[in-house]
Image (tube, rainbow, N blue to C red; front, top):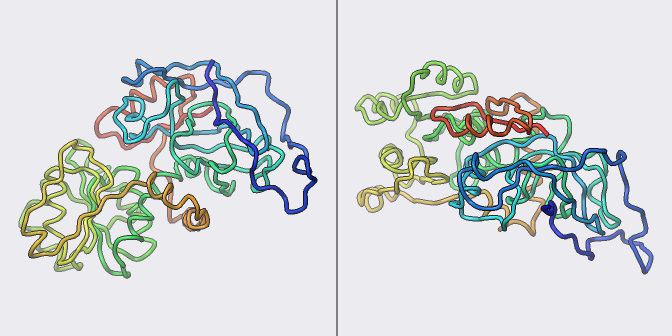
Length: 370
């Protein structure tokens, strides 16, 4: 049997006036425990997900003082989830582990000292590595973030990684005024689609680079429906006609690179003087090659960004994270930010969802429903 939650120790923040022993109120419960026991997608060794993931009965950690029992509702399959299971990601969970870094759940019970959450609240992970591909878990209060329950379920399930990455990259590296432009590759990815929408809401133009594919027109129409200004292929990016584009809009001061290799080099070519390229992914598995002239004569700045690192660096300032989530939820309510195209798949059918997630040119995110 596999323990599902983090061990929950005492010492969590209690109410200001509490008895000397205990925290002054009983654990609360939204509903009686379900008859079916908790289950999760567990891997005991690293490898290809289809081979090492198994749906198993799992144990719940004790609620304790600061524990929160969460019924998971939905969780997406992201590239980072796959990489963690393969053993190639920057952080790896201790084995055996439950897969999944993102998702949304509903609070069922809380420990004696939990004050920020109550039964019925929707929550998402505040950090990576919790293991969200499961029906139920007990997590420590500080590893969860409350979100509003009036946003669409697919938006909630996919809120904590891609939209947050897009939000931070558009906010933290260059001051972008309305009418200015951003160029990005991997524009059809979850991050890319969020960049398009958040930038459009701010009045910022986007130049979106995608790989050529059989359904290119469908993809172009989809991105433009989200607010993309220009959608071009990587082959078009290398042509002289690009000069005509920059007669219509200013050259970008910010480039967002999720691919690496030649694609990243081409992004740099189109940056304005003293612009910044932020690398957040490497889908091509090729290194970023930087022309010396870009560094010396154009004064291009190269930065990296990893949402997990940002969350951990700001773990003592949860207000900054909560403000970002509130801003994103506001965009969602206004219809200015929607989830990527999703397909909901029952947890039992996880093998089919994994297969689709690993196919090339897939723009439909697989969402596991618990």
